[in-house]
Length: 259
Length: 238
Image 1 (cartoon, helix red, strand yellow):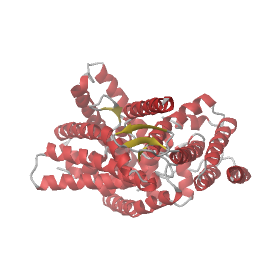
Image 2 (tube, chains in turn cyan, yellow):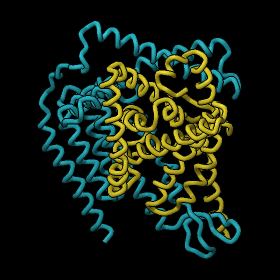
Image 3 (cartoon, chains in turn blue, orange):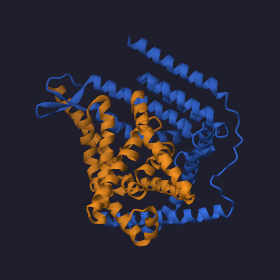
Image 4 (cartoon, chains in turn yellow, green):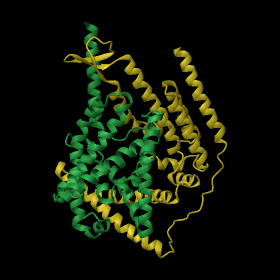
């Protein structure tokens, strides 16, 4: 499912999750705080290099993943960009609508570009975590960070059940497709409704069975698992510092270049 | 003269590109990673925390009374994730994903929804890159707190007023969906202004979607009512 498949193949997968989490958070916070075009782009490039060079992901796959949030970003940023101005304002591009001009000015372009690049940097940081750390390792890390055990357990269970249920949903979908489901708007809605409710029903029944199975194996209220053996990842700490220093350096360079 | 006409053409091309984008992916409900400034990201997170904590203790109490509830709730969370990954047709011909806001709120109540929503949104951010880690607080507030609370209120009110179940479910799901997008627009709009812009851009795509999701929720609810009355009774929604 999504990034998870690649996270399991990553060369950093066996590295302890906490340092990876730390690197992600530090880089992300610095990137957001700087709020600049250059830092955003530098963060994206830096994270891209870390993901491909250290994690061993092929750049093509990384580009494919980067395209997903891009649509959300472009819609959001264009909405910020385009606005209405009274006639005669200095605009870069605009169409006259009635008495006003709909378009964007240089300041708008700058603002939109800054948000866009900043978000790209943050997305790079998120992918560093998502493409190198499977969710099971992440929940392990949350456990050591003293997130309430019930919350972590719910996360682990939900994560496991997502795969079970999406397989069920995919099977039902094939069955419906082969019986002339999803033809036209009306039929699509009814097929989809049947699918969703059947998945819910099966989820419910399966939960019942899982609970029975657990109880017959001595379940007393908590699912305890053993810690995975990780390679120590504290060598990532100097790297984290280096990333932050480079980000701040780029920030100063940009400030100096812009005066 | 020539420059104005080229500018007009440029702007026209931009608008066409923009329209193309909105039909391509109408479900811009999630605020993408990094769109919010630090202050706002922390602020929305802080606003969401009390709701999530209240939901957490509600779940804890439920599980202490009936240990089976833990597995059931986890299944419900996974169901919410799978539901949001389905493609739903919209009237305008585009495709999008249902939010499940209305269905979740009716089935599980708004308190439980806040916790399940948090987990589901986190997984959506990590696994599918929908939403993000820094915008998690804002997304949780719009999709797992504000939307479900409204849906739940609408559903309860209409049921009290003896409205037919189908009407109540449709209204709850459609209005919850719309309210979620209003909250998202406000969240994006308050930062740099232009709330109206966000509202109009999303209104074009979200009103048909809200109707489609309302209809879908009614269909789901009808089937559930037919085949799993006992389960629904356990959830105490009927």
